[in-house]
Length: 284
Image (cartoon, rainbow, N blue to C red; front, side, top):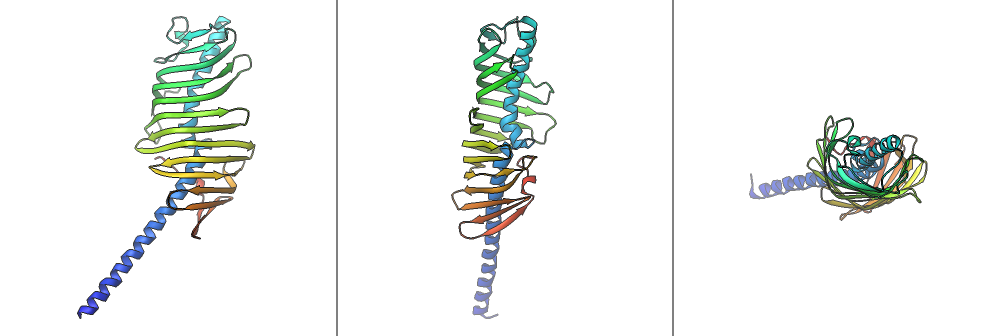
């Protein structure tokens, strides 16, 4: 083989390698946007893992409180203005291991601030809470509802039984709820097993029974995305139409939702489609 032949062969092989790397890089970039779309959807979609972890498992603690205080009120006929969950008078109503305080108006409303140094199992014994949990709101026993204003988990761990994920570790996770506009905002971070997620003022606002707006910033495994859009929901809550924009440090993707298909367009003109995108999963 002549020297020039060898050089040309080497250059050709290098071009193939570079071309292959480009394909891999593009596939990875597309996968990042697909994961970002699913994450923003799954956080608010009932029945999805991230909705359970980020929201429902937090509200579940308040539900425990609601049931506990309701039973106490039915048995006693009133509420003290200050309740220490370690007091002998109420301890029989408290899940084993749960400690903390809450205040009431002295009649049938639980108001102001709840602080829990939590270490307890949920009623189904599938979630064990350890750490600190706070909640603000108003619960009227007579009206039968809890008007939440804020939930905060400064340092909380939930260990799961019977799930495909084992543990969620919360750091300063806050759910700010605005009942007047039917919206909530998430901030803080969660590590599910070994994968990290964080929210930076990610706002969801329900504009009708079939539509919502989403805006804000979130991070998946260190990659930050900014999102804005107004998806439309089907009766099951799946985002089936509308447009969402996702921006990271590399580019902006405009996502058009059409039935079960998400069509992505980057600002450089690159296009691709993802069928059944809402069937993805973020945790094992």
